[in-house]
Image 1 (cartoon, one colour):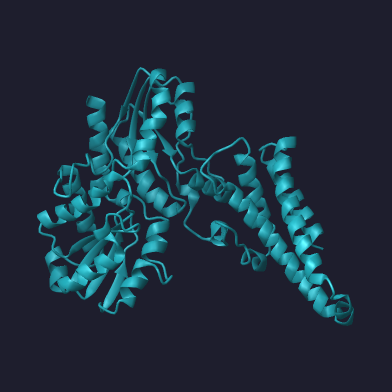
Image 2 (cartoon, rainbow, N blue to C red):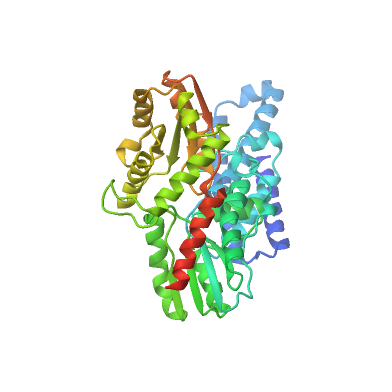
Length: 429
């Protein structure tokens, strides 16, 4: 029964791939066949070992055997989908990526609701295809040709959360397009894992950096401006500038605009106008969304706002300390900066909890200090797992209430304006 089910799912997956025009070549079929064969062989071996010495018992209890076989078949089907998801949960795009994305979705669609709940792999779970993150059709992948001679390529890490992608990333892109009507605005993501997720689940194809640059070259772009939506001059920014090196001689001019927080600076005391503008913008939005007329009014009510960034081991991690300095310089005594990664050290969750406690605040509002409100905001910050920030603040027993605001920086008009200004500066240089 298992073997029949796997063969059926393989047939469905390959059929879908062929109908979608994604291939069906011998090499592509081999990718799927090898995956399924390995899974099938492992499962059959496990079954043979489990069934060894149990023939008499199985004969005496035919109904139990039938039920067990049915459960095994469900697990086999779920494991197949998990292996197909894990195969596209990678940072490198290959010639087989399009086919693998289509095959994973076809195999998922062939599962029953009960089987979908059993999907579990190294990176696979039922939420990969099953979680509702909004309407992807509202997004614009900005992968069109007919670019013209002048292009602004907006490069983001990316997010598979559709609503956030539309509000935060598309929001920035739309603002840049409106401010620069004589330039074509296009998109690239640096996270291939996210690109594959969106393509497999929603059939929306977003270019990675190499694809976007090749598209620009093939379209005859002469003047290229790169606007990163990254928060700082961190690892993602460095990888972007490295990728550009091999393309610089293919354009008449290539310019890279500043990320959101501008130059990093040497230590935690260094701040700038970009950091000030971001601090003011995110705090104003948090206060408004919290239902207060001012930050002082929230302070009088015993409320502390905690903005959670990602954190990094890169030397640019000092940017988070600088943001705390900026908040202090603005007189925002009830605003605290933290990071998921806990780098720099003072931004670790336990240290932020202690700082808020010592300051005497009894109510806490958590909000991401990230361009998009994606996985980190929804899970690491606002999730129900015991290691989420919301859960850790609650478990500390130091506070009367913990609220979360799931909103990215990219959806704030004042933040979009900063990106527009950075692009304008690059264009004028």
